[in-house]
Amino acid sequence: MFSGSIPALATPFRDGSFDEEAYRRFVDWQIENGSTGLVPCGTTGESATLDNDEHHKVIATCAEQAAGRVPVIAGAGSNDTQTALWHIKEAQIAGADAVLLVAPYYNRPGQVGLLAHFSYLAERSELPIVLYNVPGRTVTDILPETVIELHRRFPEKIVSLKDASGDLSRVVTQRMGAGPDFNQLSGDDPLALAGYVLGQRGCISVTANVAPKLCADFHTAALAGDYDTARELNERLYPLHRAMFVDPSPAPAKYALSRLHDWWEPDVRLPIVPCSEPGKAAVDAAMEAAGLV
Image (cartoon, rainbow, N blue to C red):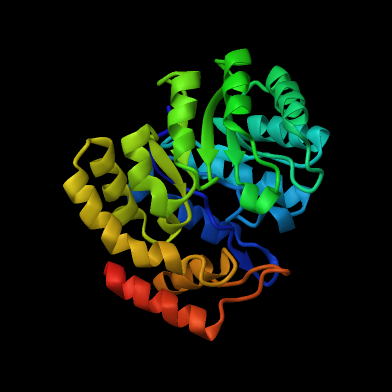
């Protein structure tokens, strides 16, 4: 099952278009530096401003370049159930190993609506599903009892959860309700170390975009129960975790990547704007503290 350091990949743009060559190099760099999975078209991948053709192209490019070396968990969520199903079907055709389904945003369905939405998709998906709960962005909150019920209904299909609720007590509630084999992943880099103690098995990460080797080493140590090493690496990474959100994401991550690679442009799409000068200074300081520059 999914574990360790799994970057939610930023999507490179050049002159307003998807930069496929840079993305292929980025996928290789991530795998070579120890990332244990890849998430194209997540929040950090600016999925909200990709058109449908671009969305499917990014997933296909990631899956093709990864070539089975690590699992590809394709972002396929939508606030429209039929659009989410379309993304799932396209991800399967592209060769993804699983799909990441965010809670429907804007519509604000209740828990009954969430059960109906995810059940409908699970019944029609041939790929395993990672639920994605990020109420700070979606407003809608997938409560633990809903997660547990979805896994009970579809134990072979709804297999995992990326939790960015910020409430670590849910890890215990969901572990006790869904069982220890239900795969729980952190969606918050700064909380990943504590999450391991409670039963999470990895993190779908923003910081791993910029520091894949350090993040991989941290997660390897945490998975092995070597918390002294994990704590040391976590503190080295912590300023970078914070810097990734000093401006709206993924502008700070894209700026950091442009410092590391001459083939990466820091371009973002409106309504996200490029990293500010104070933001750049914070990222620079964090990268220096982590030993990346």
